[in-house]
Length: 172
Image 1 (cartoon, rainbow, N blue to C red):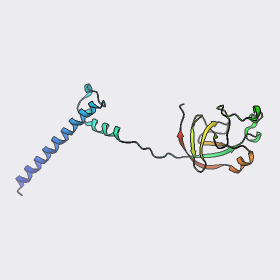
Image 2 (cartoon, helix red, strand yellow; image 1 turned 45 degrees about the vertical axis):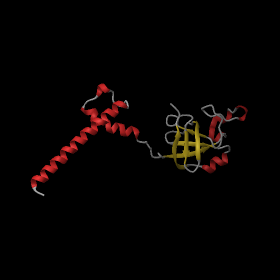
Image 3 (cartoon, helix red, strand yellow; image 1 turned 180 degrees about the horizontal axis):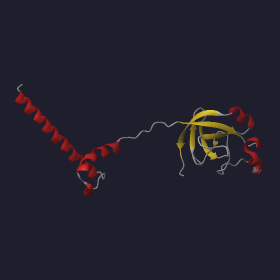
Image 4 (cartoon, rainbow, N blue to C red; image 1 turned 180 degrees about the vertical axis):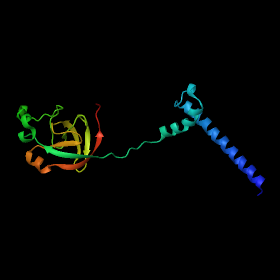
């Protein structure tokens, strides 16, 4: 192939590519207007360039990786050793949490409400789902306190390094 022929072929290819790219931006621009992504009055050279990526990003499914959080778990029960003066105020022997819910083993945990608001459901690795229903003076930051019905079970649980993830968070 001669140099002139290669030059003409290259020039034709570049020109064709530019035409196709320009046409794709024009079509994407029309699609963005049709789908309401860009109002017609805001069309300009910048929106024509941005429109295709906006349309693609909105149609792609978003998947978030599981977000595990390192935390410390301790345990408590309704006794005076664990709850101090609050243990002496149990109408009809019912343990009410700070949120007003009745404390239940297998359900109730205490957490820092500035980190996890009441009603937040946490999945605790190796333990399962628990609901933030209580708080305590020693519970701050990434620390939770797991409720047990008796002191022996709370002592057996002890203090553990755990991983948690938020299943559902209530509105703050």
